[in-house]
Length: 85
Image 1 (cartoon, helix red, strand yellow):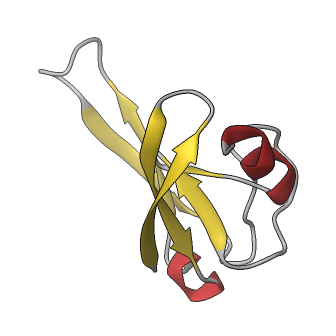
Image 2 (cartoon, rainbow, N blue to C red):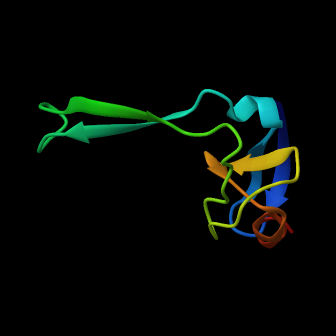
């Protein structure tokens, strides 16, 4: 995983992380119940397949690496081009 600072169309220079395929291994989705942060209870963890990498902006499958990650959101090449100048 590599970190670079790039110019964006929205907020000037911002940090981007670039993830390789192996950086996506071992992810899980967590499901919680509760009405407030005080009574949140973890109900279930569901593994995410290592090869399931989806753009957080447009939901397209990501197959090119490294994957740019902006504020925790993975970007496909099309959305990445729309974010940077």
